[in-house]
Picture 1 (tube, rainbow, N blue to C red):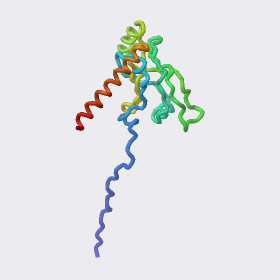
Picture 2 (spheres, one colour):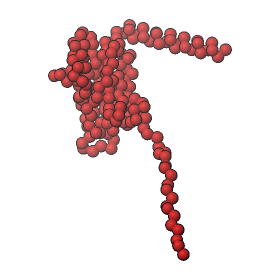
Picture 3 (cartoon, rainbow, N blue to C red):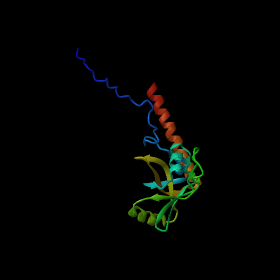
Picture 4 (spheres, one colour):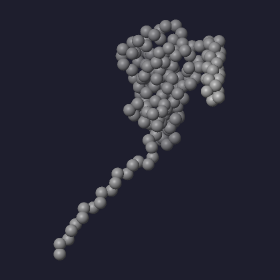
Length: 176
């Protein structure tokens, strides 16, 4: 009697049940500085890498960062991010990072020379507007900004209110 051996059945491919974190995959911003557009006229935007430690990256993924009082500074031919608060990693150990440390921004040399020339102008500063992931790396969007006066803020608020009322009126007219 001959035995017929059957090949073992191959298991079907199992799909991942848990979707990937949208912040980590770059589909959603990790952090947006909403106060920047309220307090400044944002003139020109550019992207820069951020030199972070491992626990800082984990804290950014967890949403424990704040750019509200942060600004950029060109010093000794390098670009720095100052006052950006990245909270301590909750599962960290004694090697956890300092929340308000100065972080280096990574930009190309020609971009840095442009920024040096533009920030020398009176009243212009570098403000971080958002923090996000691109290809697993933390990036910051910096904007060349000019400060708003109180009357500028009021004008912006009036314009937003008028636009919202116009959109509502158009929406009501479409429904009838």
